[in-house]
Image 1 (tube, rainbow, N blue to C red):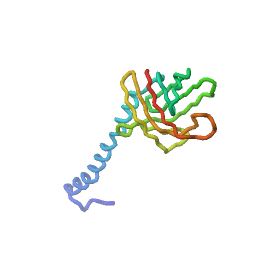
Image 2 (image 1 turned 60 degrees about the vertical axis):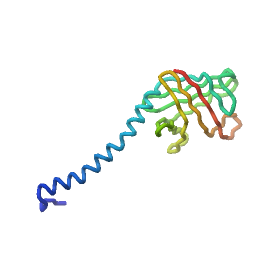
Image 3 (image 1 turned 90 degrees about the vertical axis):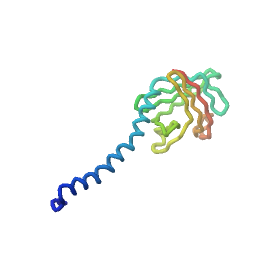
Image 4 (image 1 turned 135 degrees about the horizontal axis):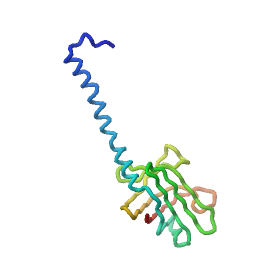
Amino acid sequence: ISLSYLSRASRNLLLFVVIAPLTVFVACNKDEDSSSEKVSELAGTWTATSATFNGVDVVEEGGSVTLVIQTNGKFTFTIMRPGRAAMVFTGKLGFDEQWLEVEYDTDPGEYEYYDITYDAHNMHIGANSVFDFDGDGTPEEVIFFLDMVR
């Protein structure tokens, strides 16, 4: 497209009108950067001091729960219960405002949202999810609360 018939001032105005909205669009995407910053604050290995799933505290049973988070949000979540096979979940974490947004590798494009509070050494997560916690081969709704330290 030739713009030679427009005056220099008109071309500059046209470029401004086209470029200004793009600049606003790019500026609006800054939320992703703050989400990445928040996720990197969680990076590290977290160990549960209490891990209650549908009223059963895995730690009190003699088991363990760990959550390993990389700075890019990739995670591995492991539940070890005495006498049972380990449950291992992987995926990616992010933030949607105050909610922890979780995308499991087994369900790409599907997100679960968890309540989270944390500081440099402590984290609490509360959520509803669906998985086979009781090991009977059928996924069920699971309400869980995790108190973790790093």
